[in-house]
Image (cartoon, rainbow over all chains, first blue to last red; front, side, top):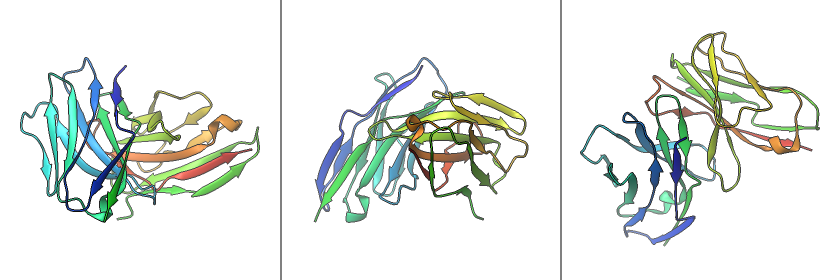
Amino acid sequence: AQTVTQSQPEMSVQEAETVTLSCTYDTSESDYYLFWYKQPPSRQMILVIRQEAYKQQNATENRFSVNFQKAAKSFSLKISDSQLGDAAMYFCAYRGLTDMRFGAGTRLTVKP
Amino acid sequence: NAGVTQTPKFQVLKTGQSMTLQCAQDMNHEYMSWYRQDPGMGLRLIHYSVGAGITDQGEVPNGYNVSRSTTEDFPLRLLSAAPSQTSVYFCASSRTGLNEQYFGPGTRLTVT
């Protein structure tokens, strides 16, 4: 079965600085997607960014970008110019054809 | 466009009681899923459906039943609630099996 590991239970960043959240996964599938979701205290799951495994180019969405290393099975999220509204739980997720797995999450605190 | 809706938002059950968590989506998505979220464990897949009339088990299916009679609705049934089923439950839908999922607001269930 696929597994997703987020090794940083908590991270902290100063407002306007950059922070990187780590994620590794394990799979034998060749066709899959990877996602980062944000969960604020409202508990709504919000999609931050997605990466198709067949694409070599790293996905970017405004201040959010990923470093996708397929051979290393690594998928980190970089948040640039951090804002107070970025404070939340962040979940890395793997989606294959018949399975979807989430990491345990990283709680991000943004200091003013 | 309401997206994915879930009812109720909160529920308290006694051990042994049964209930159904409702989930509906208005995006004509084929894929629908149910997850539970427990502290420190991320989201875990309970059951999923790839279309009306087709369902399958996820990572933690025991104690839960599902059916999919229409594209829009995907209810989750707890036949005999147990304290171990205390959790936050999320329903999600996606256009295909590899696209990003859209999540409902969640249901917080407490079993005493």
